[in-house]
Image (tube, rainbow, N blue to C red; front, side):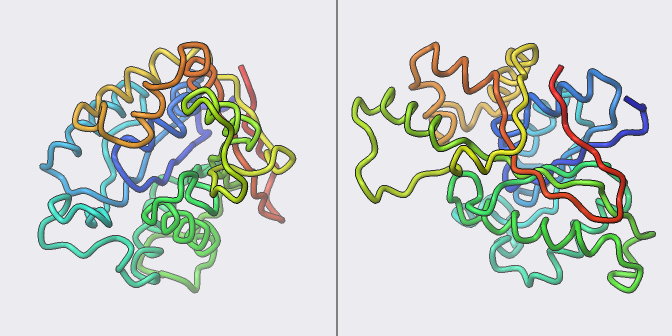
Amino acid sequence: MSVDFGVLGVHAHPDDEAIWTGGTLAKYADEGARTAVVTCTWAAGTQRAGELARSLDILGAGEPRLLGYADAGKAESAPGSPRFVDVPLDEAVGRVVEHIREFRPDVVLTFDGYGSSGHPDHVHVHRVTMAAVEAAGYDQLYPDAGDPWRPRALYLATIPRSVVISHWQAVFGTPPEAGQTLPGVSDEQVTTHLDVERWAERKWAAMHAHESEVGRGASMTLLTSLPEQARAQMLANEWYRRVSYTGTRETTLTGP
């Protein structure tokens, strides 16, 4: 891999980078790629911003790139700033376009259309990032945000539905009820699976850098409540849906 290869994650909250893409970021950083993360909520100077900095250091993903908007459910996340979900789409897209054009990634990582977990901030990040990756390549759009740059591919972090159902049963002792809304996508919609077992320990350490969320955040609570074997499977595997861009050279995330 060329050392000029770049991977940029765009996430909603501090801890999302570790939970959903931590193995991918650590793997590519170790292989010499440039890696970075844009986090759309929480402001510099807050506890969670400090935790994010420690997580990114563990993953080798540089310094925090905080947009500084408020978490949908936590006004204290960015006092005086609007909630990310309330920000005009054009403004939010432009902010992400600036980071894409400055960092010039080959690959962008973000959530799937359900926000990977259904959280409204996650869903909004998906919509904003999809629009920003497309807009970043047009010189007519956001002309003050830097020179145009089109990433080669966008990868949407997700979970195969079969894995969701298996782990649901492991945690709750019964399968999901009929009609239960579940995260993830049908297995055939998953285009890319990365075996990140070599980086699972670092991913787990990055997650625990978010001390304020350990034992409180839904995703962290789910992982810690899983039986050891199921938790190891989740930490050692990351899944994506790939979106290609015609007219650009093909780029595919690959396993070790």
